[in-house]
Every structure is written in C-alpha cells, then in structure tokens.
Length: 86
Image (tube, rainbow, N blue to C red):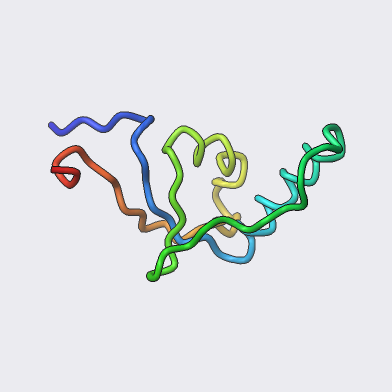
C-alpha cells in the first residue's frame, strides 16, 4: 500500500464556488485584521490547477464536501507523490 502524507501538495481545479469561498474566508479574516492586503486570487498553472497542501485543502473546503452540495473544485485531483518528485 502506498502512503501519502497530508503535508504533501495536491493540485486542484477550483470552480466558481471554490474561488468565491476562498475570497469569503479571506475577507472574513481581513475584517479582524485590517492590515491585510486586498484579496488576490490563487495562482493557477497553465492547466488551471491550484496548489494546496492536503491538510490546507481539507481545512479550507471540508465543510463544503457533503452529499448534495456542489463541490468547490473538480473532484479529480493530482497528488504530488514522492515518486513524482524524483
């Protein structure tokens, strides 16, 4: 069985729901920390993927991953395994 550490990076394609949720969470934080800069969308590669550590992806979007809810990103994700890094 292969192992995957939640600190490893994954690549996901955020949709409009996911992008809106990222902005909503940032603006909520910014309301308490006014010194934060204006929101900037995440960096996207040429194929439309954003990079997250797995734990961060789960923390950010876990509450949105429920039956009958539209997922915030394409449910096919790319794992950055140790074998790919070599």
